[in-house]
Image (cartoon, rainbow, N blue to C red; front, side):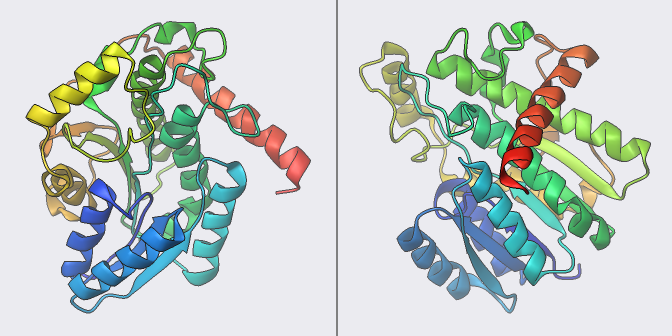
Length: 293
């Protein structure tokens, strides 16, 4: 296989860092992203040590803001004329009872799991198409099976909020987004594939700010302590989707343990997916109108 150029968001720890290490060890060019400069510097050192010849680059951006997503896309566009792999790995489980939103009133869990991947994908589609084999990989979760009230289409979690509903539903919406993009790409003959995957119950710091007083959060924490797999194991399916010839041409699927897996049909309809895309596009249109982007 020819060396790939791969951008991995949220790759300064956990699954993302392991993906960066594995791809670098294979000789691919790895674009490491993080929002903490110290963690980014430490990860760049580790990934460069693991590299067998591919370049390793660092990108600093806060993807909880639309400004941050645009800044990352622009920097990648300025430095590269093509991109082979985009792994939308960054995510958050806030775990707090109060809804948290960015300056555009986008709830942060949804922002990291759905809107940031959507915007980054749209901005980098041109580079991915130039690859001739572009792959987009969205990180979802088994927890999408526990989504509730998705059919209400409250994507901003404005009328009703709980941290677990925000997390589970956002992971479901990430799969909806994956299917919608796959359908679009196939319809216009784009040489792009997009898939989602469940990395497993991985013990990471994604819920570092979670409210440990919440009984559901405590229960999940105990489950993670007993059953969680390592970030190295959690990266396996994402790594497989990034470079395996066995998934070339497969698009719009959800994977678990390197195999296509069953997806919850909760709340799913073409009309619901259209509403999701409409919500995302409305937020982006408003942002562009005020920012001049």
